[in-house]
Every structure is written in C-alpha cells, then in structure tokens.
Length: 466
Ligand SMILES: [Fe+2]
Image (cartoon, rainbow, N blue to C red):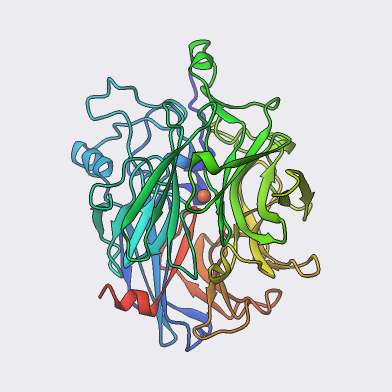
C-alpha cells in the first residue's frame, strides 16, 4: 500500500480557495480612518486544479484579493488572474503544466510553461500590473480585478519582467530586470518612461544563469544581485536539481549608472549568500548603501515539502556599503531575528530613509509570519507589532496618509489569518504606533490564503481607472 505525502502548501491556510466573491459590507472592528481611501490588493498562489507532479508554493495560479476602503467602509472581492495558461487549464478541466521542481518540457503540446502571474503587483503610468518574473506582466482593471491581458509595452517587451520593478518617486521612471536561467543574455535591464513607454533594454553579462528575484535603485544607480543560486544543465544530466545554491561561489553586486549599460557596470564581491528582497538602497558620500534580507544559503527552490530546512535559510536584515572610490564592501547584520518581505515608504525609494518595515517570521519549517517589525535606521532601534497567538500575517504594505509630511505618517496593512477560528482579516496598523492594537480589523467574508506581495492603490490612481 502506498501513502500520498501531504504537501503542507496545499493544507490549512496555504490551501487555495475556489470561490470568487464580492462582499460590499464588511464588518470592521475598530474604525477605518476617514482619510484612508483607496484599494489594498494582494497577490498569491492559488492553484485552480490539483497539481500534477511536485507542487512548490511558487507554482499556484495567481489570485488577487482586494479590499476597497472609502468613507470608513470596506468591501472585498477576489479574482483569479486570467492568464492564458489559467484559461487553457480551465477549459480542459485539469492541470496541464508542472511547476518549478519539474518543469514541463518543450514536448508539452500546450507550451513549455505557464505564466502564473502570482507574485506581486505594481501601479505605473496608469496601468495596474500583476507580476511573475518568468514572463510578461498582466494588466488588471480596478476596482473589478478583471484581467485585461498580457501587457507587453506595445510589443517592445522582449524579456521576462521582474516581480519587483522600481519606480523612482521623483522622476517617475520605472526600472525593471528580466532574467533567463537557461540562455544568454542571462540578464536584461530596462527603463520605462514616466508616461509608460519602454525606452530601452540592455543586456548585462553574467557568467552563468542565476535566479535574480529582486534588485535595487538609488537616485543615480541601479544595483543587480548576481548571487550563487545557479542553473546548470550538467547537474540535471547527473539527476540533480538544475537550480542549486553554490556555497563556494561569491555573491556579486553590480552597480551601474541608471542609464548606463554593461560597459559601465562595476562589480563588488562578498561571501556567498542569497537575497530574495531588498528593502531600499541609497547613496551616501562615496558609498552606495543597500539594505536587504540575506540568507547564508537557500534550499527554498529545491523542495516541495519544507522550504526552510537549514539555519542558512533564515533571512535576516543586513546592510551592505559599496565604496565606489575604494571598491571595498562592508556587510553588516542589522537584526538577528528572522525577517523577510521588507518594505519602505515608496516615496523614499532610492533615497536615504529613516524607517523600514518587514515581516517577522516564526521558527522553521513553515513560512509563518507572527508580526511586523518597524526599523528606525537613525538609531538602530526597532518595534514589533504582534498578531497574537495562532494568528499569522503577510507582508506589511506601508500606506502613506494623503498629504503626509512625516516619513512614517500612514498605516501598515496586511491580511492576518486566525488558525483557531479559520477566519481572515485585513489589519490596519498605525505606522507611528505599531506596538498598539490595529486601528481597524476588517473581517473577510472568506479565508484569504497566505500569499506573496501586496500593493496599495490610492484614490487618485483608482479614480483614473473608473
Ligand atoms: Fe518577491
């Protein structure tokens, strides 16, 4: 007799929900600030059908959960991102594609991979985009969360599109990267004008294909992270995973002027590590400073069961100082605690910031988030908002108060799930008083599975779409 192993990412509040619903009258515990107006949307994996082959948390079809907030009231809706692959599987009534642990080959008659659009969201130049780093973005209509379709910048998009593009808050330009683990160019770098025109894409030389989930910008520079999670075909031919962490290989950080190209890049080396997400970067005298969540190694991409298998997998907040004069690197641990999903007030992206925010992780093995951390980089202090026993949340999105002048004048928002009662809520925390109870807990009409990245769409952006 054989037993089927349970995949923990298909159980409990990692399991998908299948109802797409609308609820216009949500219960609010506490009160939503009257000057908080807009829409919180969060992306995440939500497999439409039972997976074929090994399932990894990164594989599920993208589902958007949106909470519209206005005049102290809130409404909810959720919608799948209707990608081509999603619609093909829906029409066939079954899963057709395997995931990252055993990718479908070119012999799959439906195509070799599915763009699941499940990772993150961004607003730029009047477009709201659902993102997945292996393919094109999908344009999403608001507030309906209906999928408009793949967005390719009038056919100019020639590479994949990171889940974490960077929008300069002063110039309005958007920078993005696209990487391929399998073929040169392994990395491409693009700039979109404030009006939404894809201006240029330049190849960046890397010695081998790597997974590059994020990057960073400063006022004048762009920073790439060539970290040693490499893809090697010869490993696959030996029956090993194609994508693996190589502990003997250095981490390389490439810094180039924003409008530069491969000839103007400077590479800095530091010990092997992996970084999924950057918090921010900025310039300080001769230095480019990067703050990000660093792991000593990673097995996250190699197993479908327990993603955090070793001490090396625990992400902690670090700061790197790259000296453009001397070529030296200083790497410094900022917090011993396990934290990830770092965010900043995006009005200070690429500029020196006083505050940063991150999700506080529980002990392994599952990626459960027990609270939110607010960092004060001016004095090295931090404060923590705890969700409470048996309650786990997600990335904290900073929502600035309209007209705010103080950097932390606003709110932190995330979905929290109560494992005891099985209910989910959107918590709204005063970012200037994070240790206090949430100012509002908006009770969701159905479970919101644990997911990835969220975005706040302000009233002005929202009204431009309606
Ligand atoms: Fe991400």
